[in-house]
Length: 130
Image (cartoon, rainbow, N blue to C red):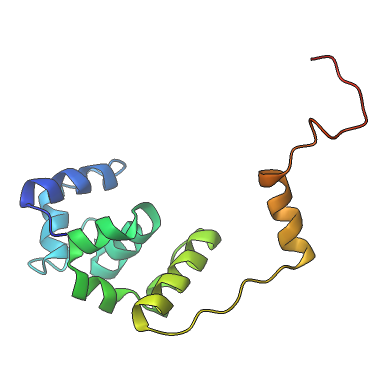
């Protein structure tokens, strides 16, 4: 999906809330009319989008071909949140047509998932007030 210029500016306004940079300047960086805007060059702005937006919005903002081209190991490595990096690594493999590895069921993963799936409330032997 490609967005109109107004839609792109609204999306960038939400991305740019913590800097005093005009959103039109960021759009110019995305579209290649400027080298940088504030502290962001093209790669840094793309990484910021990767950290804060879902992929379909990034593809609509940057264009599908350019988004796929810029999504590489270097840009993924600059993403700060580890779980987001892992998601983007899987996405890159899917976009490149590479096979994905099977999920592992290690004890660490089971402990990580335990708190999200199981509740001790009903199965606990301890009595509680309320």
